[in-house]
Image (cartoon, rainbow, N blue to C red; front, top):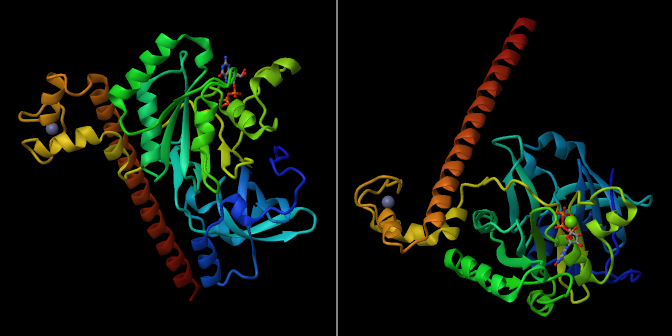
Length: 370
Ligand SMILES: Nc1nc2c(ncn2[C@@H]2O[C@H](COP(=O)(O)OP(=O)(O)OP(=O)(O)O)[C@@H](O)[C@H]2O)c(=O)[nH]1
Ligand SMILES: [Mg+2]
Ligand SMILES: [Zn+2]
């Protein structure tokens, strides 16, 4: 298993408390009510192919899940993920067995790349997500709205970070900030440079003790550099290091969690190339609330806002009241969501039918026994 040894700002101080990792009252209540007293509690700080690193008050443990957990799992969500609180048994050899995942208050997920209809968990129990986009070729409002939607469907508050501002001038920065403002309302935007550390004060002042933040964004936008600089330790490997070793780009390959000196908790993530929508909840409604509130006035209740007469959304686009690209991105993501939901429903139906066949088959076998 590939794994980094994680140091945190508490470094050699072994007296870490669960609260420092973000533990809160309801979890403790759940633990007591569910008779989990014989287990320890820890937080998953990294995962790689069903192996996990769990941090507890005693240190870090490499962990596996119980066979029972594996066999009863119905899908990806039944496996631990970075950010999860788990009940576990630890062994002296730094090894542990995870018995149960404690309730999650948020799950950031997307469509698994190359496996349509499947989901991938990015992180759990996240309070805020820093959506990092660089001012260079990476800048893309459609993609920004995708990230917002995955945050909005999972009760995670987004904060947009515009990075690498040292590579351009004031005028271009204001222009980009203005373009974000036209399409995205009510989401804080912080412009930063990891080189000059401009904007760092603002980032630092938004980070609260005991809250968990995750880094989302494409590869190479500066997520790990930001995490490293904020933590004061060189924990996450970034590109500059790999240039020194001349072995190609060192990208983040798995999810990691660290604690800052001010008590904030950060989860770094590998860059994502695709941000497929994988949720049927209200994510799109929040991201595109302007469109959803206009649609109340559409002539038809089932208006698709594509060609109908009396569509308030189309009217608003024609009058220039809503941005055309914003509207087009909405339609695209709506279609994608519908397609994803249909695929999931189809898959469920197939699984159910297969289950029935197996049941009948077992019955037949049993009948023939007598
Ligand atoms: N000029 C400039 N370069 C930056 C800035 N932030 C990061 N970089 C450089 O961009 C490259 C990628 O940075 P990383 O922090 O590894 O990017 P990442 O987002 O973690 O990438 P993945 O781990 O692949 O997702 C490195 O060479 C950094 O030195 C910045 O604000 N300005
Ligand atoms: Mg990285
Ligand atoms: Zn309409």
